[in-house]
Length: 173
Image 1 (tube, rainbow, N blue to C red):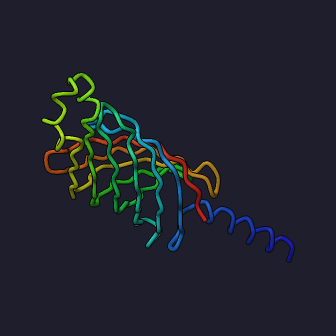
Image 2 (cartoon, helix red, strand yellow; image 1 turned 180 degrees about the horizontal axis):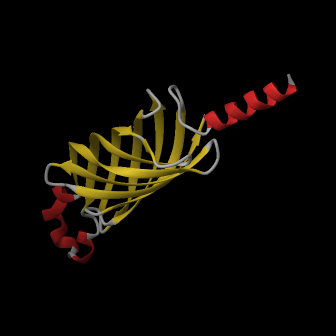
């Protein structure tokens, strides 16, 4: 009986190493956007519909550079292909909602006080856009619960397309 109990516990621990239907994963990441040309930080949550198919909701904030800042919210689907016990690759497809803001205040620093009234309506400009995400990634299961991943996606956004490269760490519940 003791042998069977050890065998059952061993099998349970080995099965737990794979993502399974109903698993929930939360994490953080660091990104680089090619259009904003700066670093961003984000959070994500994933839900596994099946062992191979999962949905991910994520949000990123890219630091301001030269007056330009950006945040985005993404909803993506991943299809996982295991390359071994701990490594998986995945294509991704989804949608993105972005907000780009350009702050002109630095532009006014060199303008004489008597001329600044000409630029009153140019303090900032916002561009809010919907788009599509296409890309792929790779993940490595460090332990049964901790995961690291690297991802590259292209955001197809009207007049504001960009590639986003991400490295993240996540915890699986």
